[in-house]
Length: 318
Image 1 (spheres, helix red, strand yellow):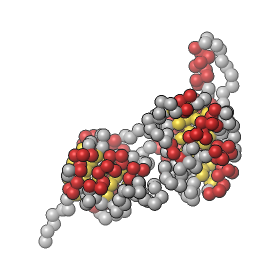
Image 2 (cartoon, helix red, strand yellow):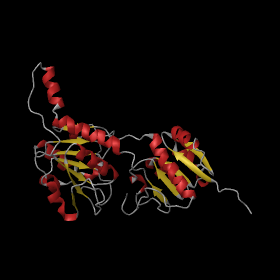
Image 3 (spheres, helix red, strand yellow):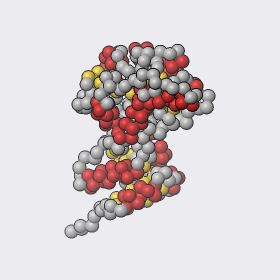
């Protein structure tokens, strides 16, 4: 009887390949051979060797058609759009990175919400002018936060909003799993969701169903006092419509971390739009130990024949 363990060949394809290789190797996972690279061309030359891939979808998408034996891809990102293109194969298990960005997203979002309510920049400008500014602050307590999408990140944000005494609405496709959302909305009820908000926070993934969901009509339904924050995907918002809303004062302002085109082109009107903060897709950067842990846990499940965590539905896009 042959008790020799099955050997799996893992390709790590990432800008941080050395870090990820070290983090995974130190666990001594059974039956795993690892090659770590940063350049897709190197992987293509050795394609048939690998049955597993771990790395950034932007790189993995360049080599996947050259890896005929791949049965599982672990994305180091939450978003997997490069692997969902119509010309990409789908005959493998795709898992993404979840439950690792919530804390950093909360720091980002509530840092800006507090900046707005506590009038931090206004007071700083008064200080520079030597002007005593004891005007009244705003407060997050009692304000209404609308979550456009309530996944794992949205759930964390909802809990933090309750910590500050905010009320939380959630607009989702159908799920109502987060107990920190005070009221849910679905389908055609988006106008009821939008009407009374103080802050609109977009956390949706970029899919065919979410593209342009924040359009002219949606923006027009928002009160003029609303600040819009987008930490999901740029193409969820009709950018021209948002620029117009900011320029004509029908929105209070916007905090934008993601865009349809990145880097944002120098001539884009967002650069000069009033009351707009641009943060260059930095709201929640990858922390390699957390991302590597997802692969490690999934590999243990894989060799035990158990379902993997955070599997992506190719049709839904998340």
